[in-house]
Image (cartoon, rainbow over all chains, first blue to last red; front, side):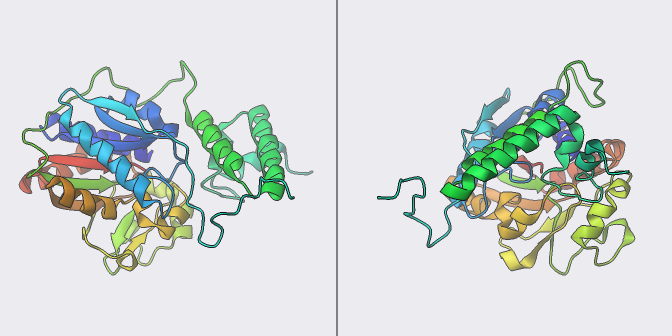
Length: 103
Length: 227
């Protein structure tokens, strides 16, 4: 329901001359179409993590950057952010590759 | 008599086994839910030896999308034929940009006390989700430079664990500050509300009220993050 609520806020703002941009996870991309959200970055992330994994500041920033860039589209545009969703490897585990066969 | 599989899968959605990451099981037909669980266990079994959980992550994401996607032809309440589109009237550099999220964040010490309840816990928010859906939402204002320990998040509709690990997952303050510096826009305000709310009241009361507030702040554009 949150995605629909935000869609209604978007419609109110756009109809009163305030342009918007938004970030929707793929599971609720249908809401973008149903509510005619004009600008959105669709992320391939789980529900509840629209910007990306915890502690992945690079992804958060790039997703927001792409959303802000959509404000330059006067007629609106929907884009898809490429995946996959991958939480950063915790410190201490970097370099370990458990898929390599034991020698 | 033992619990049916239907009752088992439905129990993850505001039932005896509530898990907001897996509440989507209720939306799946029994056969699909069974298939998802089979695939999930297969992926978990594979991860025991490799330590890699990519397959588990991808499976959850794919099946969330499958479960929440409406059936073709299903009756839908909020569907529009067309939508309003406004154009940015000035370059982003020098623009006043606000952000609104439906993540349920508020500043520590400034709890909006939803449903006239002080100190509501996350667990209580989950238990009372149906009440939230009957009320208009409350908009909390946040400090753009708030430190993580100055923020609190509470929302009965999604798994807030990731937001508690890193608020930027649903309330991207750090990227907003960084990009404001880089692109040269001003942060005109940051707000958050619990998106699980009565839709007619959002349309008739909340959205117009918030729009007037943003107009008073001479906002040029708004970034919105639904959660």
